Each structure stands twice: as C-alpha cells, then as structure tokens.
Length: 254
Image 1 (cartoon, rainbow, N blue to C red):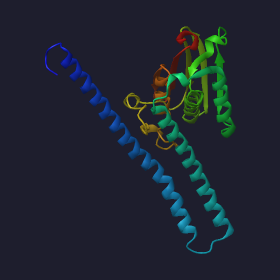
Image 2 (cartoon, helix red, strand yellow; image 1 turned 120 degrees about the vertical axis):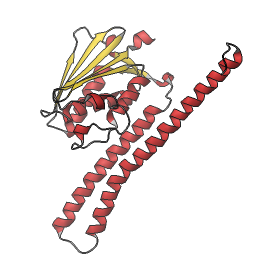
Image 3 (cartoon, rainbow, N blue to C red; image 1 turned 90 degrees about the horizontal axis):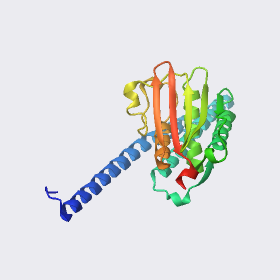
Image 4 (tube, rainbow, N blue to C red; image 1 turned 90 degrees about the vertical axis):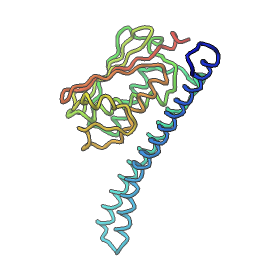
C-alpha cells in the first residue's frame, strides 16, 4: 500500500479490503457447506438404517408401526432443519431494502407465539406491550417472514431451555427505536459460549442433551443486522437469559 496519501495508496487499500471481504465470504461459505452437510447426513443416515433393517425380513405389524413412527420423526426434524437452512441462506443474501414492507412488531410476535404453542401446548408465553405503543411506534420496515422467524426462534429457545417452559416478551417504545426483550429463567449460557453463540451450528456445552441444530441464534443475528438493529444477550448459568433486540422505526427511517 505504501506510506503515501495519493490515489494509488487509496486504490491499493480499497483493493485489499475487497480481498479480505472475499476471503471471509469464501470461508463462511465453506464452513456453512461443511456443517450443513453434516447436519443433513445424520437424519438421512438414521432413516436409511431403519428402513434397511426393517426390510431385511418380514416383521410384525407393531415393528412396522414403530419404525414408521421413528422415521416420520426423523423426516419432521429433517424438514425443520432444511427450512432453517433455507432461511439462513435467505438472511445471508443481499436483500434490497426497496423490497422491505411495513411490519407490525406486535402482530408478528403474537403470530409467532400462537404458532409455537400450537405445536407445543405446554409452552407458556407472556407478551407485555407498553401503554405508549401505537401503530407508528410498533411498525418497522423489513422482511416479515424473517422478522417473525427471528422472534419465533427466541421465544422457542426461551421455552425450550427453561424447566417451566415459559418466556416473557416485553415490547417497549423508545423512539427512534422499538425494543423487544425476551426473558427466561432457564439453564443460561456460559460466558465462554456467549462469545460464539451466534456462529452457525454452534451449540453451548450445557444444551447437548436437548434437540437443536445451532442455527436459531445465528439466524436471529443476521436478521437483526439486516434490519439495522442490534441484539444484546445477558445470561447467567442456571439463572436465565435476557435477549434485547432494538430496531429503528419505519417512520424514523423514512
């Protein structure tokens, strides 16, 4: 790059920055493919093994039923994983902001909660709306599907990793932003794991016994950044976790 301040040095610095961005992009893509292949291979291997075993000789009705039930569960998990991988790829792509539409944060939060509880009746979700909120102070500009998925993931994590399977969601106005807080009293995240918790496929040491893909928080992180928001995570082992999201309001951005 040289030590001067002329146009050639600026061009060299710009070129080097571009190369650094390309290197990061290639590494991210390589890691994503490697991890995704592993995550997809596991359920596919399980399905193949079960079907090969059941077809080795005639079985009883009960044996066929048990195998089909197990295979069906593997396919459900594979389908959920595939959907999350597609959403992660979608969130990683360059989506033009011109395609963003007005999105009501309160509406997608209620929708995410209802969809989650439909499949998990034992989950308890308490949503608190600040009294000062109105249409203008609850509307952001963005991709509705991705925003709802991010909120769904945070509610699901709060319930899944808590003994009482409950989470509290607080939505507050703080112009020029809207704040969304997710509070649970679950197993928490260690300080070491917090440093890597938003990396794709990373899972904390204390959640290995709970089913999961390690995609949820990395997807949330990318969705938040795509919408010019911020995410702050505070957690204490065996005490619980607080995740704070902040998004700019549509009226302010406009």
